[in-house]
Picture 1 (spheres, rainbow, N blue to C red):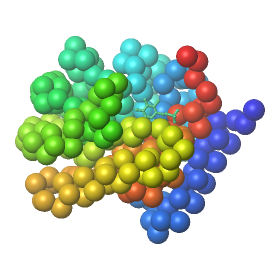
Picture 2 (picture 1 turned 90 degrees about the horizontal axis):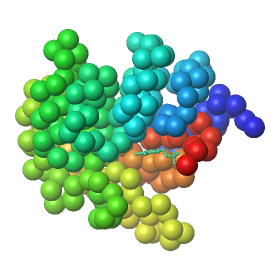
Picture 3 (picture 1 turned 120 degrees about the vertical axis):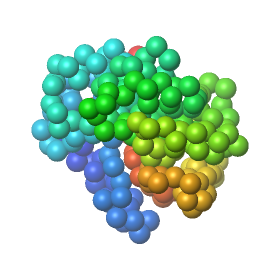
Picture 4 (picture 1 turned 90 degrees about the vertical axis):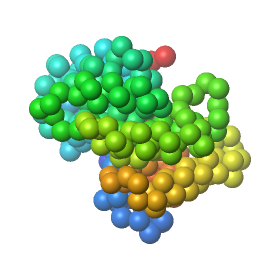
Length: 231
Ligand SMILES: *Cc1c(COP(=O)(O)O)cnc(C)c1O
């Protein structure tokens, strides 16, 4: 079995290749290592070969790992569904949150962000394929929510996040959702309402190339770095 360091290198090579093919710079892409359901020791192994950004979906599991690793250089991203009663711990322990789709959650994160910390970086989750099983706002709802969030004091609105439907074999179907996200992102970015709008969080193990071809700036990679997760 390849080590975490080997797999990480392979993923970095894929990112390099994809940026090259799309005339982008690999410094435009942030690799977020999604460590959910993997132990703190796996995070430490990735960190040992230069990985600093980690994504977690389940709050209690994440808090346990953040505490046990206790490495101030690690940057934690919350990428799971958010219930209101979880916002305080997210505001206190994470640098980024990718999965906000309601103003109420953003308001709570802003109110609960400790004064000693920099504003929390936030992406709005868009349900780009209008799937019942997924969270996220519709394309039509994004701008109004973004304007409201931009005005919150302890939040830095960074951009959009999506989980486009896995590619079904029909390459156009997949790429359409990625392309739609890119168009939406550029449209919001170009209207000059937002001062820090620079992030498009999309792309996972199976589709990072398609995401990079469509303007992604953060790819969230779990399986291809840490191996399969237990169900
Ligand atoms: C689990 C997860 C990932 C990583 O998925 P892989 O297919 O394992 O790379 C990325 N984003 C979100 C929101 C996730 O929940």
